[in-house]
Length: 151
Image (cartoon, rainbow, N blue to C red; front, side, top):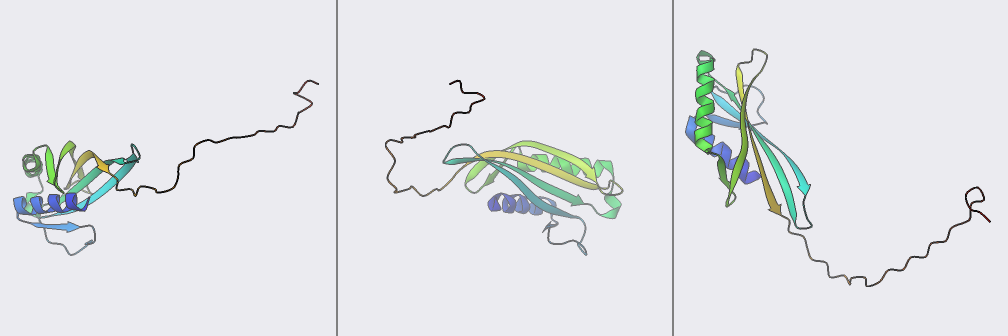
């Protein structure tokens, strides 16, 4: 996931020639800029594989003079063209499932783009050297219940 985040941040920085911040900066940032964050859900599929659903959030703060719909549409179009349906990260080409845009903030003047990616990841589990069990025997003894047990 680190390589995904770094790849997206680098591509955005090169395309838009502006600062890309991670979530640790909360004030005194220069505009225009992007903030980038990532969330993930991991679901085991087999003993050896996980399904990862990754959401990357790009939050764009435009210059004050560019807070208009045409500028936001241009930024979104450039992001779509930049990633063109996939991201090359960590030696893999990961397909972008969805790319959506929304306006957030008190004045709805901040563009937030979400990229969703789903992929399988191999787990590097150590192989157990323990001896496997051959046969399991279970003895179950029950006490008769007079209410339900005739006799």
